[in-house]
Image (cartoon, rainbow, N blue to C red; front, side, top):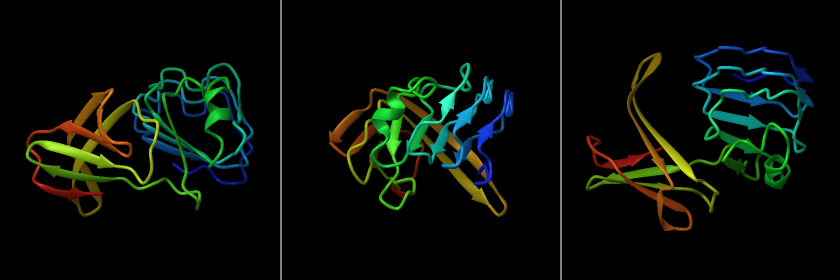
Length: 171
């Protein structure tokens, strides 16, 4: 879901129990997110907040959203979001690239091991790898792999064991 640029606040319980909500883009125009706006959005796993200053959060707008949800923020804003009420709960806060885009990652699979490569070192403490098959008009999740404190083979790579995936490269 991409919230329009004309929106300046997200109201009380706006997205409550939207269990199919997986990602959301909050535009730079949003300066306030009210209480429990995303209450019980249990499948929300990616948030991109485009405001360089963290929008003010009133009464825990992300209540019952996983702390491992990836939060993308503008370049130079990680520290501000890490210290702001409502935003500081997220353990995976990542800067958008120079163009304000979500950085791409590549996944290489071989010999039962998946290596996830990031364009630069990111502060990732948990990792979820979703593999899906594409059918015209839809995508079906084939496998979800969750790893806490993944091992790093270099400063910009995470490695994990996987089973049942074909060898090759994934994006």
